[in-house]
Amino acid sequence: MLMSLHTERRSSFMKWLCNFLKGSKPGEPNRRRPLVTAGEEDTLWQPPVRPKSDPTRNGNEELDRAIAESLAEEVKPPKERNHKGDSNDEDLARAIQDSLNMNPYTPYNPYAPSQAQPRGHRVCGGCKHEIGHGHYLSCMGIYWHPQCFRCCSCRHPIRETEFTLLGTDPYHKLCYKELHHPKCDVCLQFIPTNRSGLIEYRAHPFWGQKYCPLHEQDRTPRCCSCEKMEPRNTKYMSLGDGRSLCMECLGSAVMDTGECQPLYHSIRDYYEGMNMKLDQQIPMLLVERQALNEAMEGESKGPHHMPETRGLCLSEEQTVSSILRRPRIGGNRLLDMRTQQQKLTRRCEVTAILVLYGLPRLLTGSILAHELMHGWLRLKGYRNLNAEVEEGICQVMSYLWLESEILPASSRHAPSSSYASSSSSSSYLPTSSKKGGISHTEKKLGEFFMHQIANDTSTAYGDGFRTAYAAVNKYGLRQTLNHIRLTGGFPV
Image 1 (cartoon, rainbow, N blue to C red):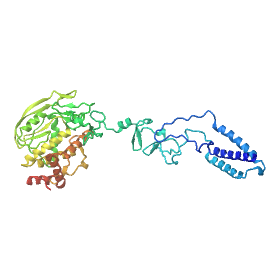
Image 2 (image 1 turned 90 degrees about the vertical axis):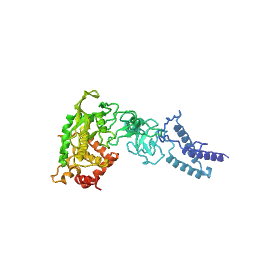
Image 3 (image 1 turned 60 degrees about the horizontal axis):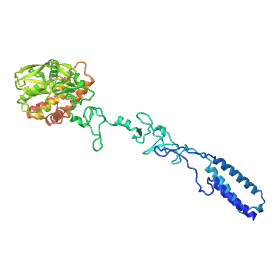
C-alpha cells in the first residue's frame, strides 16, 4: 500500500513537471505568454504591469524541491520502483528538451519584435532599410519605421490620423494642399471645388495663368495686349478708354504718332526687302480707341474687322483725331493726353493707316505690317478679294514680320525671303528693326502675338491665315500672290 501511494505521488509529480516545463500551471491549458508589438497603422499600446512577486523565482524553488524528491526516489532499490518509471523518465527527458526550445522564462518585454511576417518582407518607405521584426506603421502596402514617418514637405513627424500619400511620399494634409492644390493667380486663394467635389479653374492657353471661373464675370481687369488677368496684388495701367495694360507691356508701349514713325519706316523697309516696295507715301497715325471706332464706321469699304479693332487701312477721306504727344503716367493712369484733328485727303487708293495707341512695340508693328499689306494690295490692283483671302495674306505678312523680329536669321522659315528669292533681285533676309536685339520679356510677348495669329478661331483671320501660310510655304510668296491676282484665291 505504501509502495502504491508513492508511485502515484511520483506519477502526479511527473505530470506536473512536464506541464510546468511546457509553460503551464496544473489545471490550465498549455499556452505561451503573448509578446507585445505595435500593430498595423498607428496602434497605441500600454506598458505592461508586472506582478509584485517574481514568478520566475517561485517557479525555480518549486522545481528544485521537485527534483530533490525525484532523486531521492531514484536511489531506492529497483524492486521498489513502479514498472512505469521508465515511461515517466522518457516523458521527463522529452519535456526538458521541449523547454530548451520554448524558453518559457523569457522576460516580459514590450519592445519584443513581431513574428507576424518573415524578416525581409518589410522595407521602410522612409529610410529604405529593412524593418525586420520591430514596430512599424503600414498604409496601402507601404511600411515605415515610426520615426521615419515624416512629411516630405516640412520634414516634421506625422502624428495625425489623416494624411496624404503621393506615390510613396507621405504629407500632412495642409502641407500637401499648399504644394499641390492650385491657387488662383488673380485672388491668390486656393481654387475652390465645384458641386461634384472637383477643382475647376480656367487657364490661359499660352501663359498658363490659372484663375477661378468667377473672375470671368466679376470684371477683373485683363491686359489689352497680353490678355493676362490682373492679380490682386498688382495694379495695371489704365489707358482711360476701358483698356488696361500690364507693367511688362507698358515697358515697350508706343504712345504717340511721332514715337511710332521709326517703327513704321522699318516695316516699310521690310516690305522693300521682300521686293514689295510701296510707291506712294501712306500717312500713319496713332489714335485713341474712340477715334478708331468712328473711323471704322465711316469706312464704306471694310466688311471684315476683328471684334476688337486695333488697326485700319482707310480708303475714304476722313477727319481723324490723332495723338500728338505722349501722355504722362500718374499713379496707375495716363495724364495730359494731347490730340490733334487731322483731315485725311485721298490721293490714291489708300488714305491712311490708323493704329491704336498704347500697345507694345511688337504688337504695334504686327498691326502695321498687317494694315500695310492691305495698302499694298490696293495699290497693286488686287480687287474684290473675299475676306478669307485678303485677311489671310495680311496675317501672313504680320506673322512673318514678327518672326523676323524675335527669331535669329538662321532659324527663320523660308517664306520670309521666298518672294525676294523668286524675283530678279538678290536674296534679302530682313533683320530686326530694334538695334541691339530684344529682351527676353519682349521676345516672349512676340511669341504670344504669333501664337494668337496661328490659333485664331475666326474664319477670315484664323482659317484665312492657315490656308495662306500653307500656300506660301508650298509655293513661295510671289507665286501665291500671282495666283491670288489671277484667280482671287490661294493655290492648292
